[in-house]
Image 1 (spheres, rainbow, N blue to C red):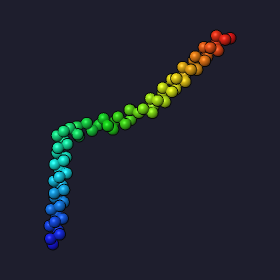
Image 2 (tube, rainbow, N blue to C red):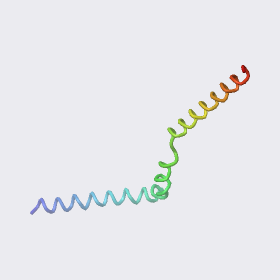
Image 3 (cartoon, rainbow, N blue to C red):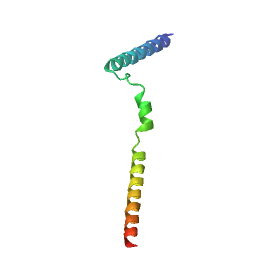
Image 4 (tube, one colour):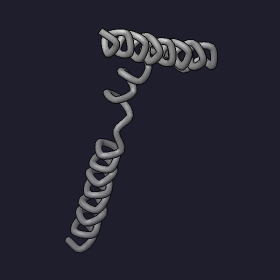
Length: 73
């Protein structure tokens, strides 16, 4: 029976610690912006920008190449 009291005491203590930590971080503003991280993952991608830049460079090279071919004819 003594172990039951010890387990209850430990679980209530642990719950109190988690509650205090939650309150501290809630006051600091940790949970204020809950929408933008979910949206940021959709729009902020460096890989997409890199691919787009590579495609733009490829188009520029093709345009320059076509200009030189037109002048040579």
